[in-house]
Length: 132
Image 1 (cartoon, rainbow, N blue to C red):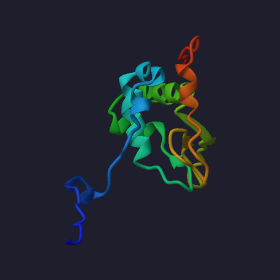
Image 2: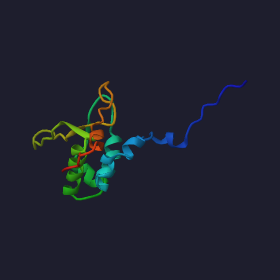
Image 3: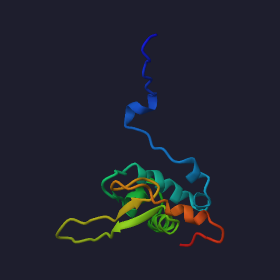
Image 4: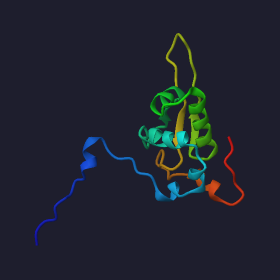
């Protein structure tokens, strides 16, 4: 018997892959999101690390989606109220020192050695509604 050959997939060669659970994509919470909020989720996930929160702000979202400032802010609020993201640290601005963007924990992914908390699943229970 010969040794098995390890197969490499062509999409693995250029910086990795983002994977989303099918149960998340089929959930009521996902279905109620705006298209901008759905665009924002993989942008946040592309910055995800297991040991630190995601630093991503409205300005960056405005450029990457692209959309207006209010639309980007609404997308963050929608993801937060739907349980997909939880704010870890608030942003601040100081003209003399460096500014800091908000940081987020992505609830569908593990963080700091703990399993995903999946707060978004609570929206799939009867009687729950997505509010902004």
